Amino acid sequence: MRTLACADCGNVPKEENTWVYGSRQWTRRPGGRCRPCHQDREERLEREAEEQLEAARAANAALRPCWTCRGSIGGKAGSKLELTEKASPDRLECPQCVSDRETEDLGPLVLPAPTKREQVAALLSAPDDPWWDVRMLHAKLYPVKDRAA
Image (cartoon, rainbow, N blue to C red; front, side, top):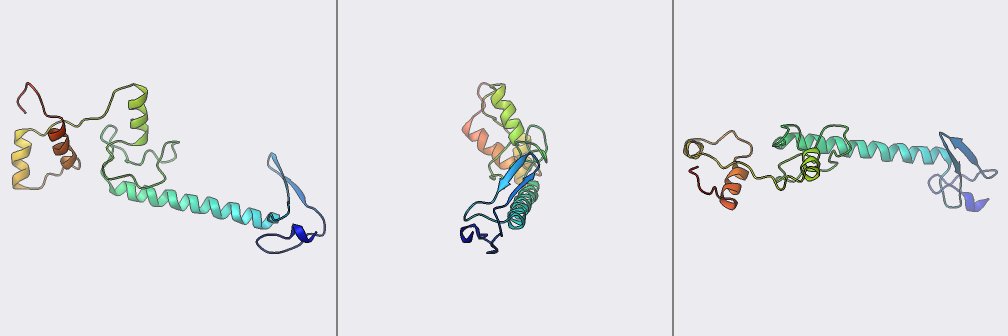
């Protein structure tokens, strides 16, 4: 029975323990944890995952919104595709919009080129467009052909 000592608290059971909870059966194994320590660990891991998700949601809310749906760049809260990490600053769409774009085979997202009027206005004051820098970069990378911008 010494080999069945809990890895966390060190308690040694009087006999081998088996519990059934939910739809699973749990048996204490050598080098494993006792039931209370196992539950505490599971709850701690769930709590840490939730804290990580909340921190990522807060960080993503501070970034610009998704270009397509204008929602959070991290994705809808509670969705399967929601990011658990802070989105990169160059990200333009939420995970759902990226997935939809791939599903519909739409190709990469290219933002519209700024008009001359917008460019002149940007010289006088900072534009309140959160995608301004990216639009300028896209205008350089993907120049407008055969039309005046």
